[in-house]
Amino acid sequence: MTRIAVLGGHGKTGRAVCTALTARGARPVPLGRADGDDLPGAVRGCDAAYLIAPNLHPDEPAYVATVLAALQDAGVGRVVYHSVASPYVPAMPHHLGKARSEDAVRRSGLAWTVLQPGAYLQNLDLTGPVRVPYDPHASFGFLDLADLGAAAAAVLLDEGHVGATYELASRVATVAELAAEADVTVERIDDPATHPWLSAMFAYYDRHGLPVGTLPLRALLGRR
Image (tube, rainbow, N blue to C red; front, side, top):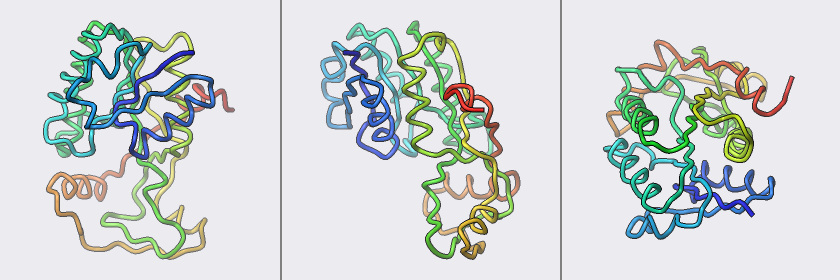
């Protein structure tokens, strides 16, 4: 059975990836921060790794470099890096951290694939009034977590994805459109973020949204 280490496997992203891997007959090995003390030992014997950095990590490139070194030490030759849509955006510092991490992955000597997911649909609570700290009419490429898991499993288990970079979105919409479909109201609120990177992100969303095409995901999952 194919064993896949999932770095960050206990969060919502990691759980979605693990669920999809299990459905495909693989054995996910979810790892968290506690496994970092002996990361080479934790990943040894795995056929590949899916790398998710902690959210808003203060130095994601350094974290990614540490994981890549551990994979090399353990003889794990395949890695899929969980990046973000539009990683090179100077106005969003945490996106730039992912852009630099992508560069490290591509230069690692490992067989690599990069996934660039859009904003998760599950980040919006559509069961009641929707309040967002940016223009609700801005366009986004939204990604369903189940679709993310299925795409991750596909690039990890199927042939032809080494050296590829895929933007991922399940649909293109605005928050206002999603709220209308759910028959709930939507309003813009003042920025509640306490982290300056989040404030920068909301300001960027307010001006530009985060558009992401849907064709790569449809192709990966064999959808029309």
